[in-house]
Length: 376
Image (tube, rainbow, N blue to C red; front, side, top):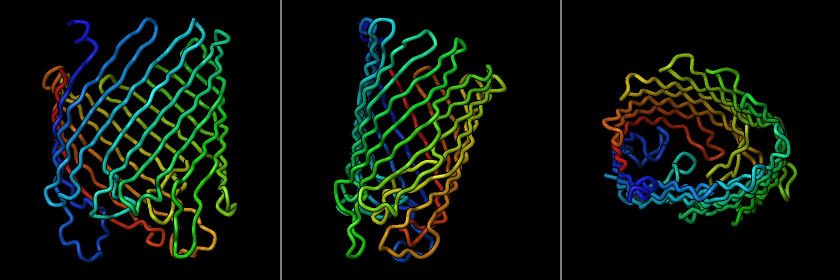
């Protein structure tokens, strides 16, 4: 029984959220006098970790029930499952194989509707590394993501993304890592997108050459980077092709024992869950701070700013700014009542200057949430 209890950890959680603009509607839209809503979320699940010789099996399973006070047609059952096997073969070969399954409500940021729209994401992966020298390793991996949407109008975003990569890393005794990786991402959209009488083929292939760095600069500073050059090519229309700098940099800085800072900057392609366009080039940054006020109380804050530049589509005329700009801030407080029970409260504020011609609206939203969780 002790062996089982050390392996499997059940948990339960309950949360309450208030959002003053749940559907992310613009200020001037008619027909929606009531924009705010309250949601209650109940969760139950388990986390497990089991060593099997030199291998380690980990995973989690969670189900949730989310109900809304006003927009009760959005009520749904959420699912979240994950499993991973960290394997080793001899002293030189190691890697991971696993998968995830997530079913949740699609965010309203790119498609405002009062109809329920569940998004299901399935992910499988396998990767491995070969330490052919005490300070050098070669690695490769394959990752597949599949997205499916419940609402018929959103099924143009049903897609599969296959990523294959290979690289080599230098790993000095300090624990840092610097490497070079080549990647190919192939996106396949399962249903054609139509704008008027024009059918849009959104399939693409993206080739990347990037530096993969994890630099332990000092005991208080760490820099992670996956950045370099990317070229995205569409199957049928080269007018939509794009290339240039692409990637993300993260800096973690902990100058004091109880205060930690994190900064991110990115320039990368990303999918857009819209009925008009399928992807954008996102450029932005964020800063965050965590403060351990006491042994049981922790505060955190984050500010994020992002610009999305949308692609022009041959044969389709768009008017107005081909980009939107989002700013958001969050502030939270967590209280660890015991080793297994946590209480938290957080508040957020979000504002976007949208691009109406590309189907993204301007909106403002504010909200607060209260959560309690217990792990056994």
